[in-house]
Image 1 (cartoon, rainbow, N blue to C red):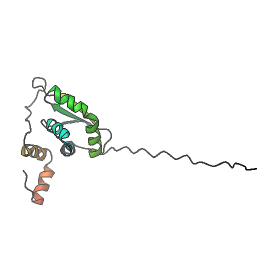
Image 2 (image 1 turned 180 degrees about the horizontal axis):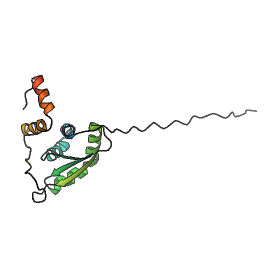
Image 3 (image 1 turned 90 degrees about the vertical axis):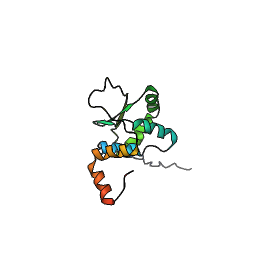
Image 4 (image 1 turned 135 degrees about the vertical axis):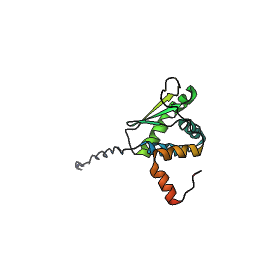
Length: 143
């Protein structure tokens, strides 16, 4: 009586996977780090991550932390931090590394801890003179 007609079903093509691979530098890392502090929990981690200037080793961002407690907090928040840096830097190859600061082991010139907004801004200007020039051109006053 009723004949079933075969129905052609289209198999949806998989969406192409877009891999972000935009190059970045230390200045871009610092800007992305400054944008990370939406809630109080993240603000505490942000303060710990900015205590020492981050190092860039290829696509790995290395942070020095003061103690085991901060290291545990950073590892707990690692997925959130990693997603933030991948999004902000537009690079899916970013990886994060955490280490405890040790004066005996970390040889070389003494690392100055950055406490105030002014110290952090001066450090940023030292690695990105273009940012200082832009502030001067726009007539912006630094804190």
